[in-house]
Length: 263
Image: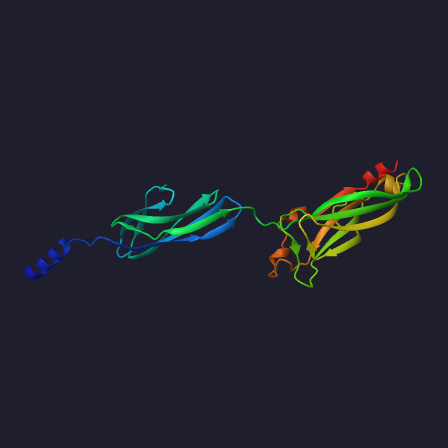
């Protein structure tokens, strides 16, 4: 090997390696603001950019003074890598979170700011509230005319309202065979397009009843009240007709309680 070639090789091997450098770091938050029921989780996403391979040490810092443990990123080549964290807050608050680069060079990201305003969630909640049994006319000790009434009530904190001209909700009253959970015979229905907070919609059905007969006395039917919505009600742009709690949209009551009234 020529002396000049050997000198160049030794020089290259002994040159100092350039250290990696974090050239930028940025953070965003989702959502940037929120009004509603607390606690609320905020998600923070950061991007760290390095101009060479190396190890980057960093930590999250935030507006309340709390700091997360030190963490590290390994860059095999120059480029960018994501960093993530979350923050769950239980009361109204305005704050921020940022990334602080500790090495190979000190750097601090932008502050990803957010605002949380805790309050009551808007809830439109028509519910199958009750089924009433009433003796309209008693004929004998065990027979008479009875009225079955289903009551739908908006127990939420905001009014239910369909778009103008649209009727997308109905209260259905079914007579169910003994022991049946599904099926039944529709005995009445009442459509509704608006329902104020605390407002009610009723659907009624009358029939003759004999508590001493096998069909009513021994094997009485039950009655089921259901709220039925247009299948597309959640697809329109009207949020004033969105039921926040569909778990209370049906209620049943046994006809044995009518027998107790006619005895």
